[in-house]
Image (cartoon, rainbow, N blue to C red; front, side, top):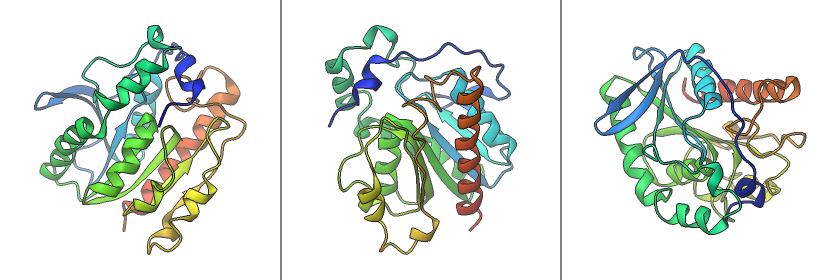
Length: 241
């Protein structure tokens, strides 16, 4: 299991955005919070390997504006991968076995899920980008109480991963991801398959909806907006059941 070459070699764009939410902590876990705590619909957002970035903050704010209570945990505790790590596959692979491993990340997910419960959230979804996509698929396979998840230009997805999920999944690959048709079809016999969805963004590159997207570029911004609209529609549907 390894990252795609484009993931290891392409730097994130430098973007500016004035956040509408706020940073605070759940215990020792720093998070970005956006939206009303009175919402009964919560979304945990799993950023990509570059951590907190203006694009993912903006995406969280857009989801919050649509009525969701959104929590973006700093799963890497202020130590994301950086441009200095690009071109170093060993660094990326070490990341998946240590700080970015599910064994570590699931403990942070548990803190956020407890926070949602404590605040009266009754339906929780998860969204992940790049490496975060792998975390989301694993969460849907191993954690109870999740209404569904969405993965955008996901990395590290292996044969058989999607067949293990226990809730609806939306898959939005870019041109740099493999053909996930067989993986997606492996969910066909699940009772929630009618709520699953996949759409390829073959005109976009890995990271366009995350830290690598240049949302000052008209076409990239349009396609990022298209993906966000799909996220809103998906979570509006599955978190209202």
